[in-house]
Length: 300
Ligand code: MN
Image 1 (cartoon, rainbow, N blue to C red):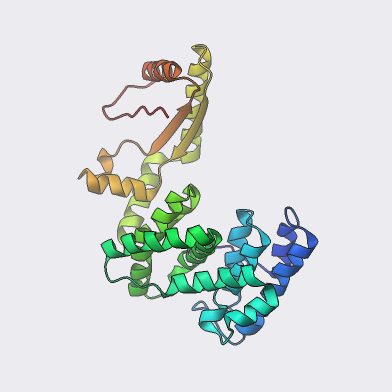
Image 2 (image 1 turned 30 degrees about the vertical axis):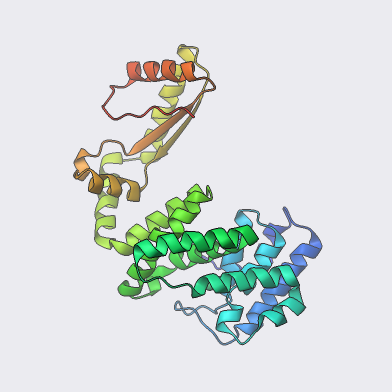
């Protein structure tokens, strides 16, 4: 979500002290000041100084507790492409590893695709190659794209659509493959709004109408599920969530249903430790709620 106030290097350094050492934080600061100088006089479409972008990318990675070299690469990720700085210069300032990461991100940016199918296939190959060398290149790139998606509203509708399409086709699947579920969901929500602003607004309104206070309903159902499991003497962990807009939309589209026909706007997961417990829990839940065809039972 876009933050009301822009991050500063000081607030980031503050956050970093929870998991990085002093020297490491100083190196992140050094990379920031270097980027600030390199991007001097450059601005984002929003009118913000350009350096606010690499800083935000580094902040996203800090939330994932990424190491200091990834954060340094995040600070410098657009320097080779957008300023006169060379890889050699970065290497002499920040060492081989950071220079390689920055170079890797820049190279990834240069890949362009002529079609969707080609994009997916090719991109996965490139991704795999980059991953074999250093997975952090991909993570910096994903954070870069996430910040660009979060700040899309200043672009023209045409550009928003193009970037949204590319993100949905390429970056959301990559995030998914890497197990970054929160990032995938945020990509999908932002892309949906960028690609289909009218539909996104209509579904949002419809969801609001039927859900009322959504958080409360999820909590109520979860509480009654937990009470039911307790009564039946079935130990398990219950996790409840609201389905996100894009997954509701996908279901409407793939099953040719209208919004009023989509019943499952909430999802619950009950995790137990044995297969037989799984079936007994399903039985208990059916005694609580009327089963509908298509309810899935998955044991892994
Ligand atoms: Mn960037």
